[in-house]
Image (cartoon, rainbow, N blue to C red):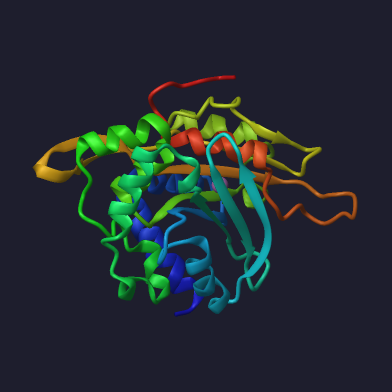
Amino acid sequence: MDLDAFFEHLWRDYVAMAPRAAELRAVFEARGDTVVNDHVAFRTFDRAPIRVADLEPHLLALGYTPLEPYRFDDKHLNAWAYLPPTAGQPRVFLSELCTEEMPGEVVDIVDALCAQIDPGACTGPDVFWSGRLWAAPTWAQYETLRAHSEYAAWMAALGLRPNHFTIHVNALDSCDTLEDVLRVVEEAGATVSAAGGRIKGSVEVGLEQGSTIADRAEVELADGERHTIPTCYYEFALRHPGPDGTLYQGFVASSADRIFESTDTRAPSAS
Ligand code: NI
């Protein structure tokens, strides 16, 4: 599979979950912009056969190179960033829940879900849009997970698929600053996440990021119960040159920490 086909599959899965993203992309294209994808981010559990270590070989086979790891203590996540084979192609960000750091009831639910995975479903790059590889959790399980980790609840309900795509703001002709972008997004009717402030990061750290809050969709959980839950969001990233003059390529853990909260629609927080 070539990289264009890989991202086309991902985009189709993503906009099925987050139709607002397709609308926002069209808004920028109507302004004359070429929309370039900065990165796609995925969530997973640290359980075989879907650990980051299990998923990484598919990225390496597509020509990706590991850049560096990140750690999110409060959310109990580890992550890795990957650089594309050619500049201008999307980076990939893989994070995973450190299940053993969670309370026993979370460990039990995650293990029960992951025990259902058919390893044969994880042998190719299509695992990245395979969705839920286990029977739908009950609403009670979803709520138990969410009480401890919104990330775990999201994974249990939605599975392996893009969590967000990201517009590379540097490539937009119609906007000079990230605030310009966020204003266009809001004028189009979307809501910008306020968690950690509208703009996470700074020129000094090389990366400024903002995002919408996640779309919501009705999902069928166990016993035919239907619930409306947060799905996926759109991110916007403006990269700045470092001291050597080249554009910063990595991620900023303190910013990504709050970007994760774009799917947490319970308690909006500006702090
Ligand atoms: Ni991101």
